[in-house]
Amino acid sequence: MERRCLDCGESLRGRSDKKFCSDQCRNNYNNRLNRDETTFIRNVQNVLRRNRRILTELNPEGNAKIHRDKLIAKGYNFDFFTNNYTTKTGRIYYFCFEQGYFPGENGYLELVKREEDF
Image (cartoon, rainbow, N blue to C red; front, side, top):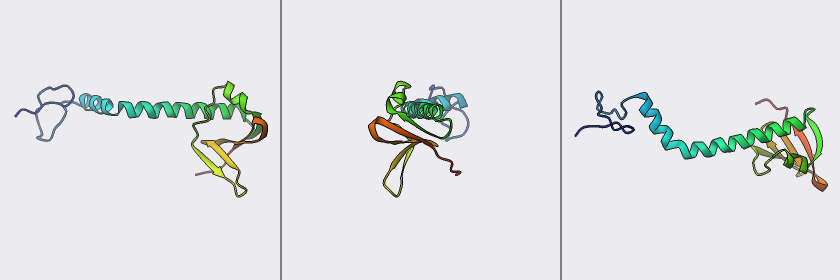
């Protein structure tokens, strides 16, 4: 039984456990297998980067108070954040990497910047 490349179907020569005829075929095959997953992850990362960029732009000093509508107008997506932090008093801050916000009253948000080193 002749062994064939899993990507292009070309006949294989060499080691008995060889699956691909070249590095290019190996890369093509694995990229095709992971395409759906990679596309989803790339889209989520793009939203997170955009959210962080918006928060950084609106909070240059590290502490600001703005209306929620200003974030929405710039394209901020409130469904995506990297983590949240609950204080001892029960306030929940939502962070997009080091930039975050606390939803206050009347649609206003308190923007904060985390200064922690990991």
